[in-house]
Length: 181
Length: 191
Picture (cartoon, chains in turn brown, yellow):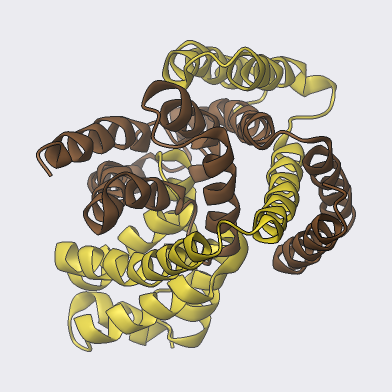
């Protein structure tokens, strides 16, 4: 219990600043969250991180609920609330404040330049996030599943990813049953 | 229908906070796969006419530039348009509370069967496919074409520094963002 406020504070200090750097959405934070949760703060092992990532992707919601799960793992419900608020409050306040000014900027040089200039970094961060979780999850089978799923989703972009998650999960469970993984 | 959305913002036919919470709660628990912006359009613009197309598109533009989840940023702006600061808070709480309970419920459920090797294998399979979804999303966004060679270099530099070398993300963004914005400003015919 005495260490509780300290872990809550650590969650705020990790997720609060990240909130203002998640350009192009929550997926861009994946690599940094993995680094902070596993290597810096030892909140989860590689194994647990990969599990939490999988669970967060199977649940509904806007962007990433991964921060919520890490908060929950660290300090229960209080941690879940703290991490969620820390991740979403700063960016929400920013968009709340900026939205009036932004309308006047529409069509200006800077408006387009910021939008276009950050796009290639956002794309890189999303791919880096995939690599970070792959390194955490390890295992040739996971790499293979990731590669196959990438190809399938690029080929059929309208496919509901949950179907693919379910099929992949069941195949892995069957393989485990027969001792192949 | 357009007049309803205008009235909603001006207060003649205000949308109640309870109705907003309910609508955004539903949006949160039904938007799978990160497509919140598209679901929000269907629910708030097409079905309920709470805001019009133009307001939606302006909000989408801003939600992409400001850091944070695009879905949450959109929700903040729609809530703000409907009921000011209180509206924004209620809309975001509605959006996030459902997924929060669901995701923790799933994790707690998994913790009960965590000893089972089959459960672990199942999650490995889900993780693998989910990483595939992440890659597919990122690859679609990768800049392409001869005019975009500088942008492509920025993407590659980001992947190598953050994804392979595992440098911390914040300094990498702070170094690359001015380069990206500068390139966009220098592009011939920009603006």
